[in-house]
Image (cartoon, rainbow, N blue to C red; front, side, top):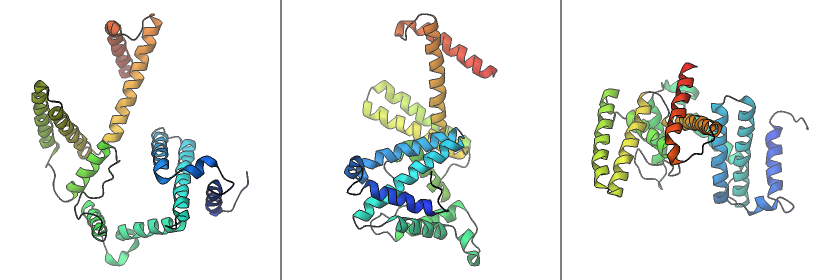
Length: 266
């Protein structure tokens, strides 16, 4: 492996990406577009998140490298179209960081950080973009996972004072939404059930904001816990010579409770 002086690795990466897209480059990469690359980038972000959750430095470094590669790749695509290049992206990012953090970079203003100030700065930026609607909740990516979107929505409205005074009030709202869902479940109206289930999920997601817990992370943790416990169930049934079938629900439930007891004992 060639050791390059600090920062020259960025240039080396950009040269490699340019070569991938060049005449003698990789056929697969030459066929890709922004849209075809996007799903791969989303996967890389999730893999980085997993590495962070595992607190694995080596994996975090590798996944950050993969993500940086994707950024460089998008910049190369854009440069080929005459839109912008990697340097433009870096300059824009740095300018935005400085503009959005006057309490760090502009001591003369004597601005102190607050959620309201943060939203004020971001809102001022949006007003300069004529293509965007002038609303507080404008600009949320449609591809953002729904739980994260609910969290971000309440974060924004909370900053301007549109919020419950305490968690008790939110619990009352959750109970209200649950009652409405029960009514619609009896109606068998799929559209209404979906609507009320969405209200329940939205309300519960907001609870994460009041407890400083990211609902997306909390649900992923619950998913992992369920998978771990069901893997235990599956192993137990195999040891008993049983298959995962509806008629074996009782031994499955027994194994599930056994797993929960073992976890609590740890």
